[in-house]
Image (tube, rainbow, N blue to C red; front, side, top):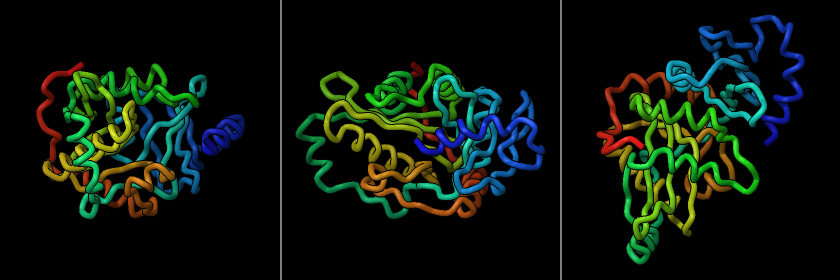
Length: 244
């Protein structure tokens, strides 16, 4: 991933850099800088932790963590941001027929940790480190992270998870073990978000896969403006049947 490569090469230059320039080094209780001033790559800050308050502050500011094992925590707000437009998104017509034929069942928030572990199972390696797994499970238990799950014959075969603050849902990752199971979970999640009154579904970075699913790209300034409005809305994901 080019961002992480660039971040590694710039970390040495970070030390001694004036505090007014980005990225900044985060102390334990230091707030995030204004992401408007980040360059197009979007590296805003380095360091800090993955506590619930820190993660909530990040997502409320349009910032998210993304880093490899062995690196310090890297916080990003890229110049272009991918979203799913909740107002115009349309599920593929064949998907409902496929789901019936394969006996897919949708559940929400019954196996959050298992969904995260499924998302971490990647042949090319994963950015979902042990600290990320722990931090987002704490966020889930606090009521700010949720998942949609696809089950087949009693087995979890696909899912997607993300962070929820007001009317913002920030999608983090998706996985599938059976063809179309992840896509089915995504479509079920979008329907749930619409029903609950969410207005912004962040997908972070546009790539061929998310573009094929319907994601579009907007500018950072546009995204940050939408975030400010979305997090003020009195919206909730709904009851968590159990927390695992």
